[in-house]
Amino acid sequence: MEEIADGNAKIQEAIRKGNVNISDHADDELANDAIEDNDLYFSVLHGEVIEDYADDKPFPSCLICGNDKNNRHIHSVWAHSEKHEIAVLIAAYIPDPERWINYKMRKPKR
Image 1 (cartoon, rainbow, N blue to C red):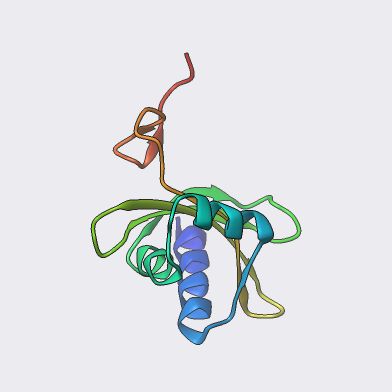
Image 2 (image 1 turned 90 degrees about the vertical axis):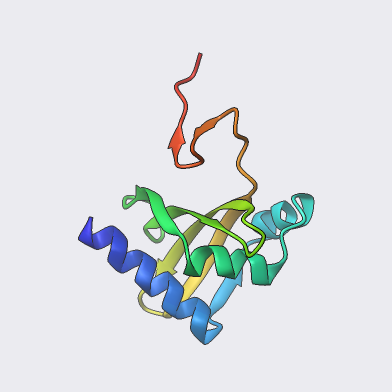
């Protein structure tokens, strides 16, 4: 768990410094779910890692669950480049409650 917390801390630090790269896919998802950048960043800064993808390439990534200031749940997938000290947003969306238990655990597939 220490690695997960450390990865989240590095993502949060990159966000605080403005060192963020948003993929085209994530940008489309933000627009589709009407998630503003400030709401996204708030959810990450106050959120928690719920899934860790340590073997992802080219950088390890994780799924962060957090709420915006209006208590709306937001999921975002982030990677962090140690070399460039940048956080990369891979995906972001409003989680479907039909697919998640308390927005933090995937429901079993039927």
